[in-house]
Image 1 (cartoon, rainbow, N blue to C red):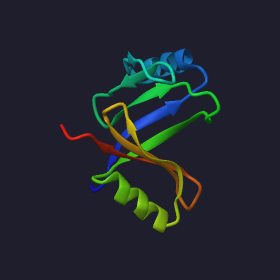
Image 2 (cartoon, one colour):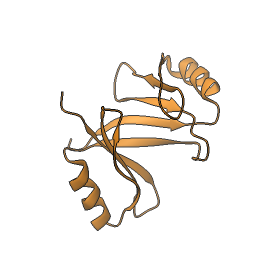
Image 3 (cartoon, helix red, strand yellow):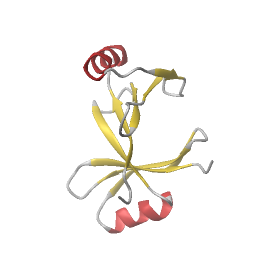
Image 4 (cartoon, helix red, strand yellow):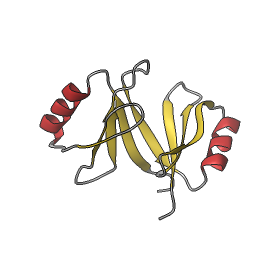
Length: 118
């Protein structure tokens, strides 16, 4: 499948409560990493994409799915021509890759992700 979901991210006002819930519900374990916005708790289930949980004040409490792309700039530009609104445009993420955050024409939030070449 082209452009699969590659990462899922939860923004929550209560990181500890979310980690407790998902560890009990899904059996996930978390690896806390430092980030400029505070702790970022990574998880990786046995199957499917992994993700992270963070607390970013001011952002809505919601899951954000990431689609994998080969060229972040071309994919972001294509999304715009198809009616998307750019919320965050093609930023580098701490040496891991590049992301854009968009609102699709129906109002759903989606992120695009281009990993850094290994």
